[in-house]
Every structure is written in structure tokens, then in C-alpha cells.
Image 1 (cartoon, rainbow over the protein chains, first blue to last red):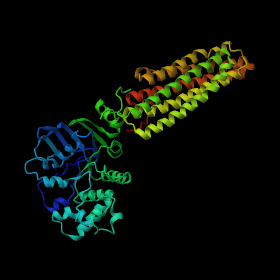
Image 2 (cartoon, chains in turn yellow, orange; image 1 turned 90 degrees about the vertical axis):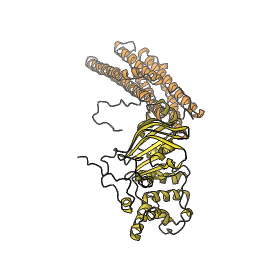
Image 3 (cartoon, chains in turn red, orange; image 1 turned 60 degrees about the vertical axis):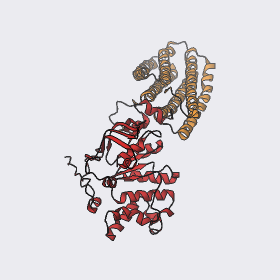
Image 4 (cartoon, rainbow over the protein chains, first blue to last red; image 1 turned 180 degrees about the horizontal axis):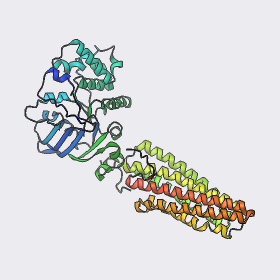
Amino acid sequence: MIETPVIRPFSMPSSESILAKPEAEIAGKQAPAFEVRNLSLWYGDKQAIKDVTIDLPSKTVTAIIGPSGCGKSTFLRCLNRMHELVPRTRMTGEVLFRGENLYGAGVDPAVVRRRVGMIFQKSNPFPTMSIADNVIVGLKLNGVRNRRVLNERLEKSLRMAALWDEVKNDLDKPGVSLSGGQQQRLCIARAIAVEPEVVLMDEPASALDPIATMKIEELIRQLSTDYTIVIVTHNMQQASRVSDVTAFFYMGQLIEFDETRRLFTNPKEKQTEDYITGRFG
Amino acid sequence: MNPSRHILQDFDAALESLRGDVLMMASLTDRNLQNAMGCLLDGNSQLCAVAVADEEEIDVLEKKIDNDGVEVLLRFQPVASDLRHVISTMKVSANLERVADQAVRIAQRSRKLTMPAVLEETHILGPMFVEATNLFRDSVRAFADENVTLARSIKSRDREIDQMNHDIADNLTDKMALFPSHITDYVNLIFIARHLERVGDHAKNIGEEAVYVAEAEDIRHRSNQLEVSH
């Protein structure tokens, strides 16, 4: 029997709501976390997203690929309202997250971003903070003061980010003292410390060496058992390695969305085939 | 084939080279089959020697295609139709090499025949030889042209060759009882029919690869109950 999912209202900014995981996941791994309907977005006069409709499955890694300027990063930002930080942005359509309209009246963008975390291309640990403070800063900002809770969450997050063994004796050292790959995993630990339900990643490994990249990719696979992950990447081999489903964007439009294996072996659309096989720039 | 060119010209060149090599290998294999047929049906011992000697060239091409295919996978990391082409080309090349092996074995067994080539017993293999060769040629044509209709027809035609093999074996087994002095020749002819039946099997494999290249559909072992889920 399929249980009705318990929906947490967005306008619940207490620390309790941050610490609590949804009591019931939407039944089945493929149930959509996001339902995007007729999404269009403009930066000033320039339309960046054109009438995109797509369901992004829960607890699954979704890769978004496409050439530069195709709208994939913009689309990602629409999933946690980050695009609202860009001036002269206008959006139509709707984005439902577990059935709730992300852009509905009374929805607090800060709470949205807590439930839908984001990792950027360039790692960005807070330069004045220690490794430990970088991880738990989000919890502190949301009113968590219990030292035992903070310590438990610190270790858990660093372990989940596959960083604990490397930094457990240096927790008081500055976050920026770590290598590039470690800094990016620190940012992932920071993102998952507040226990989001979704982690958005915008080219999270593009500035890293191959070994650090592989660690991030392995981490993505492990996190996908607990989190919905949406990753934008220019690296198609990376998309084929880490993702379960892949969306191909071109000039603001969603061209094709399918299982990753199928999209990379037998795409339905010629535009997808031409892009992934390197037949146009 | 996708008519568009790749941004990387070396990628186009590498794929075209692979295609050229496998078609050359198919051409040499076809010639080998013809020489083996001349050896059997005309008793031309010179053609027997040529069939055996030519196999070396085919073996070299098989290794070249494998090496070049691995290099393409490594350098260009192909996906979609490009990936299917590389994988299938390598598999077709392995099948071509085995067809050439069958041609050599036919030639070697033909040389052992003591009965004159013009005898009826030898010539009952003629229609099977023609059918196996035609099937082989059609499979290569289907692969080269991505002709799915032709490719899909090959499996049923292979079953006809299987039936010819059974009929010939029955026929020659009966003759063994009638002419025991020729038992060795009959055994060799039964083996030659078996080699031709194997040629049909490899043609079927090539036809299956043609379907996979063109439509990304795996039509192998369709009668099996267990299917690999994707």
C-alpha cells in the first residue's frame, strides 16, 4: 500500500523543522521530487528557459547536460529560487516540490534553500571559519545550540562527505587550508549538515583534479541513497557515470529526458545525438 | 551512419578507418570462402593453398581492428551511435575471422578428399555453399548499409542452412553404409557441411550486430526466457 507522503510546510522556520527529516518519503525511488510545469525564465529581455516541463525523480541522481548558455544552470537555480538573487529576472510556470508550489504565497525562500541545498562550481568555504565551524554554521544560524547535537552532526556530515578521516584531527584549522577537492567536500558536508532533501550541484568537480573528481563522484553515488541530487555538468562521461537519468537542454529548451544509459546509447532526438557525440559546438 | 561530421576530425578519421578495415576484412573473408568453394567443388588444390595462406592477412586485420577500436574508446570515449559502431565493428571483425577459419578448415578437409571432386557426393554441398556465401554477403551488406530489413531476414535464412546441414548429414550417413570404402571422404564432407553451417551462424551474428548498430536493439537469443534488464 502506498502511504501518503507527509508534506512539511515551507513556512516553518523553527530549528525543529530543520532537524526533522520528512517522516515518509514518497513511495518508490522514482516518485518525483520536483514537478516542473511550463517553466520559462527571462533575464531582462533574454529568455533563458523556454516552457520546460519535467518531473525530477526522488532519491535519484539527475544530470543536466547541454552546451554553454543552454539554460541548465538557470534551470537548476529555479529549483531552489536562487535565480531570484539575479536582478531583472522574470519567471512563469510553476515548480512543485513534493507537491508544494515553491513559488507559492508565504513560501520563505530561505527555507526552500535549506531543504534544497546547493553546491557550486568553485568551492566556497567561509575563509575566516574553521573546518568545524564551516560545517555547522548553518545549524547555528538556525538556532541549534546544543553542543552534543552540533558535534554529532559535524561528524556525521563529514563522514557522509567522505572527509572525516582526513580532517578529524584538524577540525580547528581554517577551512581554506584544505586542498581544492577537500574544500569542495567540505562544502558538501556544510550543505548536508542541515539535512536538506535535495542537493543541487552546479559543475561541482569541474575545477578539481581527476582523483578529487572521482571522490566527489563516489560521494554523489553514496548520497543518492538518501538525497535527491540534481547535477549540472559539462562532462558527459561524468554524467554517464554518476546519474540515473539525464536531461539534455539546448537553447533554453528541454530536448530530451531519459534514463542515462538509454540517452547515452540510443538518444531519440537528433539534437541530443549530435551534441553527445560531438557533432556540433 | 549519422551523416553529420564530428567537431574532432580525428574522430571521423578513426571511425572511417575502422569501417574501412572491417569492410576490407569482409572482402578478404569472402574471397577466402570462394577459394575454399573452388577447392572443394573444382578440386583445385592451388586454391586450397591460397585459402589457407590468406587467413593470416585476415588475422592481422582482426588484431588491427581490435587495437584501433580500443584506441577510439580510449581517445574519444564515444557514445550513442558512435559507441555502437565501435563495439559492433569489433564484434563483426571477430565473426569475420571465424568465417575465415571455417573457409580454411573447408580447404584443409577438401584436400583430404580422395574421391574426384566431380562426384555427386561432393556436389550435394554446392547449393549449401552458395546459400551460406549469399547469407554471409547479405549480412555484411546489411551491416555496411545499416539495412535493418535485410539484417532481420538473416536469422530465418540461417535456419534453412541448418536444415541443409541436417539433410546432407543424413544423406551421407546413408551412403556410408552403401559405400564403406569412402567412409573417410563422407566424414570429411559431413564436417565441411558443418563448417558451412557455422558460416551461417556467423552471418546471423553479423546481422544481429547490423540491427544493433542501426536501431540499438539487441535481437540476440530472443528465444531465451531470461532477458537482461536495462
